[in-house]
Length: 174
Image 1 (cartoon, rainbow, N blue to C red):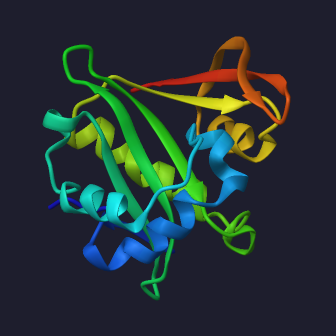
Image 2 (image 1 turned 90 degrees about the vertical axis):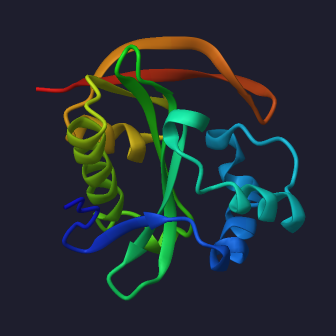
């Protein structure tokens, strides 16, 4: 049986009831740098996204899951993206919406649960993560979970009038 549950969180598919959460998250300009967003999203566009969120990862090459606390509160999202079944790899990303929910272990637990799913159920060989160099919390998270820094993309992200490097992390299944 597939288990997407950790000790303090569980991961679940997006539901229609997640529209308001998704709207708040996608329109939070403080996280646009990590998501690559440049313009606000309307509820109508997000509703269309939710209407198609059930599509298979093999079809859309992405899997986005809600991070939920054991009290059923949605606190963030975790993604597999650029899913490449031929080469058995995917990117992995995470965002926890409010600062109050960060630095409590939910992020690492969520990524660990998704890693287990990716390596065991999807039979992936490797995962990678792209992290802006000044996102020390994410760098710590991926290093703690055994991701190896394999490269730096120079001047990769343009944000607030200047360029930032992006660090590439990789985790090979053992």
